[in-house]
Length: 359
Ligand SMILES: Nc1nc2c(c(=O)[nH]1)N[C@H]1C(S)=C(S)[C@@H](COP(=O)(O)O)O[C@H]1N2
Ligand SMILES: [Mo]
Image 1 (cartoon, rainbow, N blue to C red):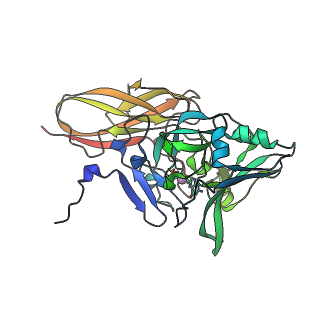
Image 2: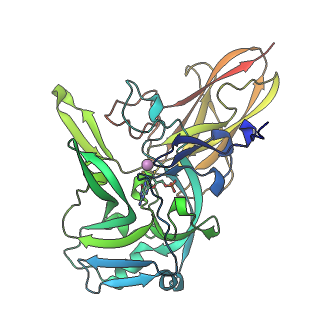
Image 3: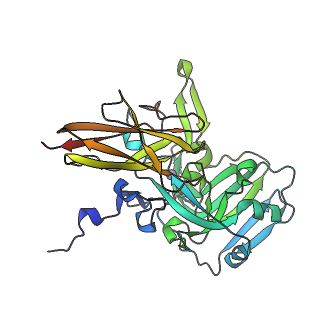
C-alpha cells in the first residue's frame, strides 16, 4: 500500500495545478510568522521563473535622473530593514461570495504572514532620483504567459504599479529574504516587492524592472484585474481599484466541523486590517445576537496580523455556529455579507464555523 501522509500533515490545499496555487490550512496559521511550507502560493502563469541570483539584474528607469542597474549583491550592500507583514490575496474567501463569481475558488486560506528582509524601495528610488514628473512606479516580474483580453489571447508579463506616495513609504520593501532564508522560487526568488497593507497582487514577485512613469498605469493586472466592478445606483457600473486590506479575522481553532468536548476550549485566531491596527475582536455563539470580546495576544507588529483568543466554557451539548469579527482603529468592522462584485474581490465577511459538542 502507498504510504500517504495523513490529512493533518498536509500543509497546503491545492487550488489550481496550472498555474500553481495553493492555500493555507487555517489550523496551521496559528502563529505570528507562517513557515514557508504553510505559506499560501498564488501565481498567474504556468512557469515559475527559475532565476539565478548571481546573474539577476534589476533595472530602474523612466522618469529618473540616473537610471540604475542593480545586482543582488548591490542590493545586499544597502541598509536593510526587517519586518513582519501579512499578505492576503484579493481573491481570498471568494468561494463564499454569493451569487457565485469567476476566479480561483479560494476558501479562507489565501493569507499568510512572513518576516521579510530587504531594502526600502524609497532608498533605491532616491538613488535613481525621481524627476518632478514622476507619478506612478511600475513593477515587472519575470513571469509571463497568456491571458484573455476582450475575448482574445494576449501574451503578457506580470506588471503592477504603485502611486509614488505608496512606493516611497519606508516599509515598502524590495525583499530578498522571507523568514530568515532566501526567497523560495514560488515566493519570488531572488527579489520581490512587499507592499504592506495592500492586497498582495501589489507585492510583485520575481522583480526584473522598475519603471517610473508620469501617467497612471493601465496594464492587464491593473486595469482589467483587481478592480472592483460593482453595480452602482441605477445599474451604472462603477470601477474602483483594489488597494487596502479590509479588516478581517479568522478562527484558526477550532476548525469548521470540529467536534469539541464539554469542558473548556481555547478559541483562537488571527485578525488584520490595512487601515490601522486591530483594536477589537469579538466572538458570537448565537448567530450574531450577542458578542463577547476576545483578548488580543502575542506580538503587535504594524503590518502583520494580530493573534486573538477567548476561553469558551463548553457547558452544554449541541450544534453551534461560532462567528468572529474584528474592528480596526479607523472604526471599520466586518459585515455579515459583502456587496457582490464581479470577481469576488476583498471578501471580508464575518467568518462563521460550525462546531458540534456531543452529549
Ligand atoms: N510576478 C508576479 N508577482 C505576483 C503574482 C504573479 O502571478 N506574478 N501574483 C500576485 C498575487 S495575486 C498574490 S496574492 C501574491 C502571492 O504571493 P505568494 O505566492 O508569495 O503568497 O503575489 C503577487 N505577485
Ligand atoms: Mo492574489
